[in-house]
Amino acid sequence: MKIAIIGASSAIAHDAAKCFARDHAEFVLVGRSEDKLSVVAEDLKVWGAQRAEIYVQDVTDLEQHEELLAHTIETLGGLDLILIAHGTLGDQRKSELSVAETLKELNNNAISVISLLTLVANYFEDRKSGCIAVISSVAGDRGRKSNYVYGTAKATVSTFLQGLRNRLAKSGVSVVTIKPGTVATPMTAHMKQGLLFAQPKVVGECIYNGIKKHRDVIYAPGYWRYIMFVIKSIPESVFKKLSV
Image (tube, rainbow, N blue to C red):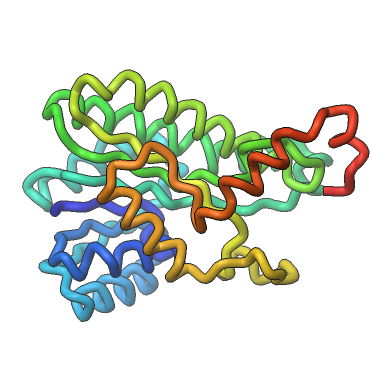
């Protein structure tokens, strides 16, 4: 399998990639840090990857996306799966005080993702095969005052993926929305870890298994499906009084 991973140095993406490496997949790993990507590439080879090439790019630079996709396809001689895993967990308070900060977070977590999706969807649609998988978040299932800028970006991505899934279904292209809950990664290191925090390895295995089974939506771990069902069911008149 020929796989591109955007944001490949993230903990979740790395652990998901290990699962595919066991199947002797070929990778192009994309991210901003050459050093971090190199570490991931070498590790995936240990896990069984047939090859792991790196491509250094800040994917918030939308003008570089066509070149990125073309390079990836040329390097691997095609593409079977793209996993889009980049993103930032911004400071909600800073976003509340700054339009620029809000737009930066929306660009990092939504606009840059949608740009990549638009290009890769056309590629897979023409081929009439392939899989598009994107890490969204349970935060997009309902807006909360503690992280609604981040949640808005993830909700936008999830909705875009719903439409894309509907469009590409007749072409035989799988579109997978991945919704992790709270995960113990460097991005959440500043947060107090409770019982619901999952390890990246667990989430990575959820992603691998869900993609293999052609799931439309993966809650990772699965118990978040039920938690979010309850949260979404709370009436707005009650929810707005809660400190969440």
